[in-house]
Image (tube, rainbow over all chains, first blue to last red; front, side):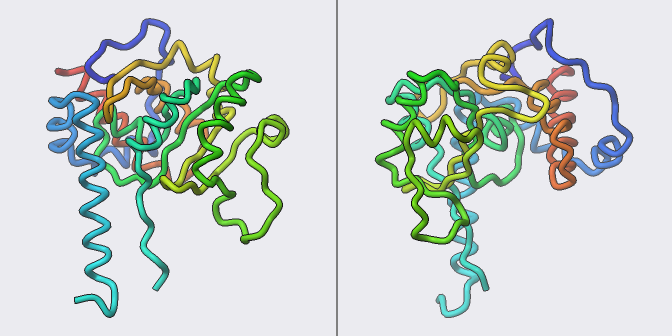
Length: 65
Length: 166
């Protein structure tokens, strides 16, 4: 996981100008927060986020109160 | 308005695969989230080993979850068995636990055996699973060349930079 160092044989990534352009808009605050968590905690957070997203989508649908 | 897409039960699927002894590596959005990516994802993508014994375990594990070809019209004579898995490679399925993509290979990444050395173990949802390593995840997403992945790739690379700094 991201807590572990990269494997020595891992592929080297050359910068891609298109991706670099996208990268300027990345909000790193949330990424930094996530890096403080364990992988398991990150995935619990994902599941909770997806549940809340479903609730919001359900509440926003026509005919729902 | 189309029906809202429901996220898969990631924990339920991972626990089932582990309980069934399936050899697999988590890739895609869930692997990204395990590394710290902060993006919504709805399905579980795994690369599975193509050995005969693993195909049998996959069938025994996923078969009871009513797998069907996602987006295909109902009523097709789809059988989720080892012969079907051998004939095909990548399967995008709906199951009773949500959407599950079973991938025999990744573009630019190869199959289970090729990816194994670039995967890492981590505990999630009460089980220990293998996840594709961050660098390799970025590499395969780049190789796929899908414009819809550009934001995710940028976030994954930012994540790597942040991780390297800390």
